[in-house]
Image 1 (tube, rainbow, N blue to C red):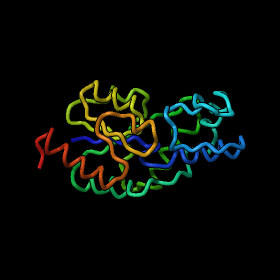
Image 2 (tube, helix red, strand yellow):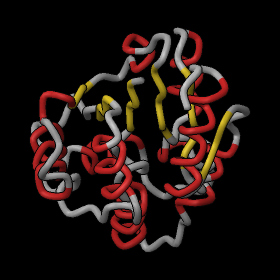
Image 3 (cartoon, one colour):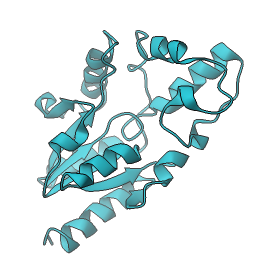
Image 4 (tube, one colour):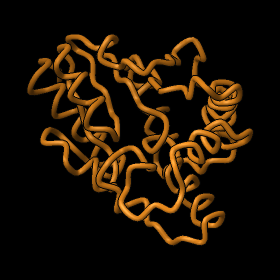
Length: 191
């Protein structure tokens, strides 16, 4: 079985950092956990426009010093040790000349055992989907696209828009591991 992990807000605290920068620079106090949509510039009450966020997402260093979500590194290591094919499937900010290199550097730093050939950069995650493939992602659009193309989607996180996903969802890595094992038994005929 192949397991694909989104990186931002599944592996690291991307939205937490993004909102901290936005709040500081715009004298605001938005809580990222309350987001009901994935596009920050479309949130009600946001003081900045789309141009601000486009520049912010292209800023050097934005994707570097992100905190790993507790348990992420350990779960990736455990799944690889158990023989699962693990991939990181992440959306690059195409307009940023720093994003892809910084994401790779982050993976090297926090997952030094991870084979960098198993990183896939794409916006169209459903194109990678198929039978016996699981995607763990925070974005319901990506999860639906994944399932529409034959895979199994698992929503991950405590952000409001993730909770809108009607399928499998968890908010910690212990529950995620148990769910992967359950899916393997029920749907894929594993032990």
